[in-house]
Image (cartoon, rainbow, N blue to C red; front, side, top):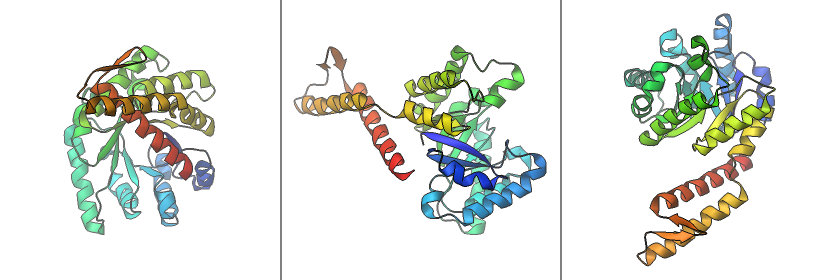
Length: 290
């Protein structure tokens, strides 16, 4: 996932527009973008959309459910799980115990409705406690494929400035290191300033430098920025390929430390180059599919 765009679950008429936005993933939202009065209608709309999708479209879908304490998550999960292989985004997770509770809930529903493949999870970090426990959340279930930052709940209730790059950088680095240790991906959260494209682009670049796998968006303009910033450049791909090729030759000769263009290279740098090449390949495949 590089770019992800939200669609309120009670606004199914927006679906084709979201599919045409250029986003790699469409998040059908049952949580914050849906008012309490519309939760049931949203669930029914999402169920109908999923039932009418082919496998290709489903492969681009994320369903964001309501949280563990909402009293609605069981019904939300049943809708998502019944659709087959869609990614499930769970908000407001703060501890390994909560993730294990979620894991048990999913296992019970999967058994009940006859789902064979374990659901994949994108877990949200959006409270101070969740941020402090980011690694515990990331590593508590093998279902987890990534952590995602939820800035609004993390910052706004506490009067923390969203436009402070130093503080946002701390949050990003904390989540990224937690996911690195857990061996899963990190995804950056949305930015509500729809007209401040310069700040949004800067935040995208900061996330990319930390090797985040992507970022959430509110509209097609933000999607275009994310896709542009997160896509490896031709020069980056060429340089990475040179490192990988040179390393293969040097390692064959028993040389573990060598120089390319005045830069010392050893195994960690080779792994970084391989990671960039994989990102480039993933991006190319996603562009062909979207």
